[in-house]
Amino acid sequence: MKSMRPNVIDMHRRAEIHLDEPTLKDKLISVALWGAGIAWIVPMMGSMTLLSMVTTPKKLDWLSRIYTRGQVFLTGSRLRVHVHPDVDPNGVYMFVQNHTNHFDHVTSYAATPQFKQGLELESHFKYPVYGWFMTARGTIPVRPGKEGQSPRIMKRMQEEVDAGHSILAFPEGTRTRDGRVGRFRSGVFFMARDLGISVVPISVTGMYEVMHKGSLVIRPGQTVTIHVGAPISMKGLSDDQVRVRTEEVRGIIAAHVDRHWEERARQRGELEVS
Image 1 (cartoon, rainbow, N blue to C red):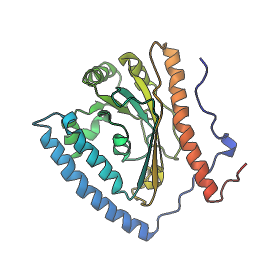
Image 2: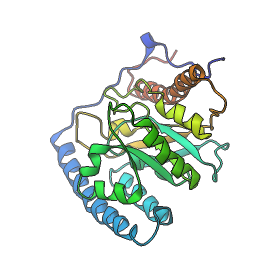
Image 3: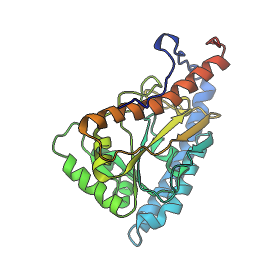
């Protein structure tokens, strides 16, 4: 099978990722943004949790979209969205996204009209408000490093797909430490094949600058761009082909991220234009 992976920047020419150290002013602004964000998330998630007792989460999707857009807005970010025309508004997909920070679950949600059900670490369901909301919404819990949970997860995914819901997953399994796209785990790709749904790659750039692993400082004024790629069929693939396809999808997502850092370095005068 010919690789679909785009030709990205050569390793020896890759742009260095450089973020300025936050100033005292940056930290004070971040505290204010965290306060505004918490003041938004608590009543919004609380309301949706309570409303889920009398209606279905899908019927509350309009409210989820208000919540997710508002949460990104309260980081002080500008949002740009590019959706490939082959993405069917009524299609059911496995959306796979690069994993950057704690805002990933809201960043791309409203980019397409699909109701998206997520995968979340089981330990996160213990968090007040957030955990209650995920339980009410039907988020699928995952136990890290545990064997034998795939049939349970697959059953829950099948239920979601049968209901016309899409799945949102982060194949890296953990947030990036360096701003680049890490190694992808192939589990969700096998599940997409077995569920009979296509994979849609989502690349998010600019969110690493907003906040990154190892720091809780929110930096406003960033442009966050969401690239929703063309659906990629998993139908009829062998196990080896699924593993190859996993790397191909990773390459598509990584290419957007690498180009973002190259352009950013050029703007800062840190990378010569060849």
